Image (tube, rainbow, N blue to C red; front, top):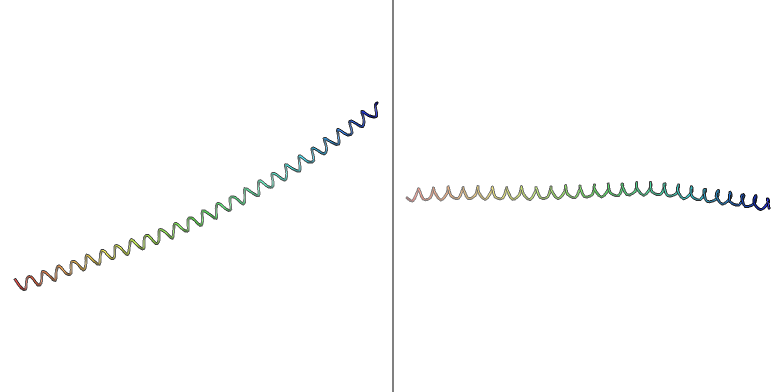
Amino acid sequence: MKKTRREMKLQNQLIILFVGIVAISVGLVGAVSYAKAKKEAMQAIEQRLERETDMMYELVQNLLFILIRREDSHFNEAKRSKWEMNRLNYILLKIG
């Protein structure tokens, strides 16, 4: 009877040892995988933010260019209109 108890204890010890080794291995693999996934996710987010920032910068530059062209166009139209009004006034003064 004592032999079977001793064998049982040895079997329990081996099971506990095996379960412990498996648990430690799974824990280490999980921790390493989590750290790697976190790092890759952060890099992907940073790259996307950089792309979005570049796109927004280019969009703002294009909008500013369009705004400046419109302002120049309005300025030129106003300048042309003023020149035409002065010309008409000159002609009216000559006639009148």
